[in-house]
Amino acid sequence: MTTPEQWAYALELPAVSDTQDRSVVARCDFTVKTGAIGVAVTGLDGSILFENEYLPADGRTVIEHVLPVGYRSIIFRNRAPHGARSSVVVESVHIGEAAAGDVPQPLVARRNVATEVRPETGGIECFETPAASWINRARLDHLAGLDLDVNGRSVLEVGAGVGFLSPFFLERDCRLVTTEARRENVDELQRRFPDVRSEVADVEDSLLTLGRFDIVFCYGLLYHLESPVRALRNMAEVCDDLLLIETVVCDSPLPIARLDDETLTVSQALRGLAHRPSSSYLALALNRIGFDHVYAAVERPDFPDFIWTPVGDDAFFRDGHLLRRVFVASRSALYSSGLVPLT
Image 1 (tube, helix red, strand yellow):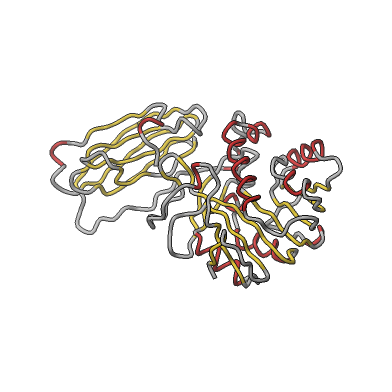
Image 2 (spheres, rainbow, N blue to C red):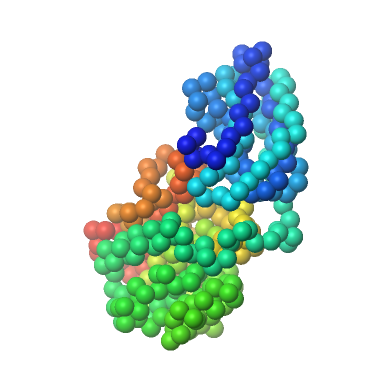
């Protein structure tokens, strides 16, 4: 959840005084003009009782929710650190008494991905922001600390972006192949690494034409996919030893994945839809597709997205940060104090 210090602006609508002693239904009718807007409800102590994920611009949107006794306010706000400019017009907010048995309806904002354009600064420059540089340094330092058998091996890097993690394997004399689903990302990979084979490939399609590899490396990609299990199967088909994964996860002890929208920025979901799997989802899926041994990294990369404590609330975004974990799937047992077995 974002904190007030991270909002570029927020419109707070106080509770109606004569409804605070009983449950009520709030119907919020608003239009997101640009960017993306979130809607939250606070309790009397200021805590967030519930919040919707950020809703992108797509005409008028209606959200209806049953509010508990003692709510304090409804807030419309944007997210300053990670979002582009945004604006919203609140058409109306109607507060009415909840009938017995009322439950929230799963209303979803309308969206037509086919008509969307790429957001401003959504090209390959998004790979070079200060935050991107920071997380990539943390990923590389952490990967080196795992002390895996990497030197001189064949590696397929899936979803390589524009190659900021690729030198890790090149410096270790690996035979590297990189892939990206967008042509412009591959063009940049070929410009940066002319001696490395780089291919346009969608991991949700077969990868068999690329060959077989000792290691498949998949950092920062899985949570951007429509069909994560299909992608894991495709990676497993070409992986002879280790599958290395870093991804955003949802905080649940159950093997579940949350579906979410993403923009058409070149570092985001190819078709606008993405999943945030739980750790147990990944462990179950990886084991069932053929990896006898699945591990999570004990130590975390030195970046805020990795530093969080499980609470089981199904969130994938908390306190202004995504929730990330590192996983290692292996065909054979690994004996490392830096890895904890999940299977």
